[in-house]
Length: 320
Image 1 (cartoon, rainbow, N blue to C red):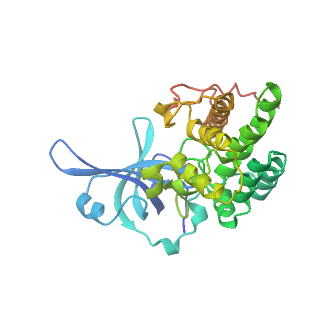
Image 2 (image 1 turned 45 degrees about the vertical axis):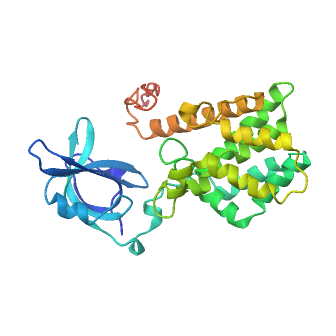
Image 3 (image 1 turned 90 degrees about the vertical axis):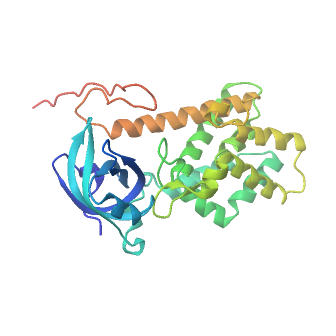
């Protein structure tokens, strides 16, 4: 049973606990001897670690993704915490509680799903509604959709994250579709619902959140398109031009080839979907980053991916 979480670890502490080995990199010192750089994780976050002694023996017994029992001491290195590990051994997965290692949305999953279903029911285009129903009448799909994360690290990277992200995007899509004239509201809403469905298979999330083999080899856009094709085969009539427009929403929602979209957005609905996705993912990521920082500080530390500090506001002193 896990005793202590990463969020509670401080410099100077001793560590004797169970973690997921998220990353293992074998490197060499200047003298030619091996050492290990590792990353440990649990539901509260990650922490770096290093193994200086018995490196070959320890490295041979574990692989990335394993549960490990770690014994070591915590120090600060270049401004971040680091565990100097003396012992690291594999730990059997049947003796762990998955809830200790899988972060989960703070929101009610069933309540979010009910809200999403209500939004789906407002789609009036018969063939689009038939496609959405084909997915959400599939119990296996729904179970995965409610559980899957939306990412490994950047945003909504927790159990229920895909549902939370999708619900938020459909709400934004509905509002924006009403703001601009000439928008195909049902198509935009369908794109928001289906744009990330491939993530149910892009990730593994039974004991840890990581990319599956399928996810690494194909990615969620390719997986999602295949899923759409499979459901379309069940629908008698779906206009071919609308199939292309819907698939284009899925293909282009990352915005550019640099960020993983085979094609950039080429319809107004696709442009809107890309920006809606960008808004929701960025806001979630920034909020999570701010929440993980020192509450007494006015500014966050430097966010390396977004390349900036974030202002949190000055703390108002308590009136005694």
